[in-house]
Length: 307
Image (tube, rainbow, N blue to C red; front, top):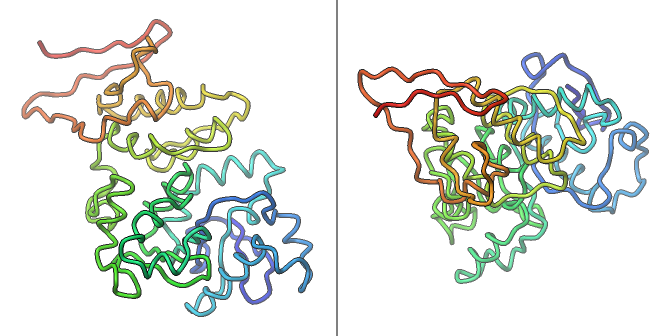
């Protein structure tokens, strides 16, 4: 795991998140010209610092210093994506990295301060932020213990816990975020662990989100389902099937089969979008009845059900 020293903007390496010192972590949506690993390695003060991509790195580091932290992690430049092994390890570890962070800064450059001051326009503007639509930001919302949201000028919108708007004009920001994401406030604040939430419900959270690469709609969900698996860029939509196969191997929650899509004859869903109507599906716990093991094979699903 590499972290940015916020005082020098140099990368320092640590074995894993357990051995790393306290650090801040950035959650954002990627632009067209993000600062990459080699660009940070070759950084010289004063070069291209007015670019938004550099600006958010400086804002992250400056905020970390204010918060008394020496290190920060930014996905665009702390991973050497030229190494497939490193990229695979990073993506499989990313949920834990956000979870172990001291604080997560959410940068929303498409949210303007004037929107926040207008009572009637706040939710529509906040809801329209691109941050709510991307696959990767789902785990970045769920994993951190402490999360602070910033607008285009790096002014605080709100934080969890508690998710209260800094201006006081929108005290029910938690309800707004629940409305946007359809995720219970108790899950957002970790009062209810992810392990207590059914597979279909968690899939429904991702049903409206998108990723640039088809494979990433599966890879961005690995930590949410506590799954580790190799990355195979080029496999396309097969990645989501492979994720579901791994979930079936490790879980007895049959709500993974509770999806809609008549156009698909398969037992497994083709995309998370097929779980859009599954947000209320709760696995039934039958007292005194053991859940029979089931498995997928080349012929289909082998399962025993009560009649």
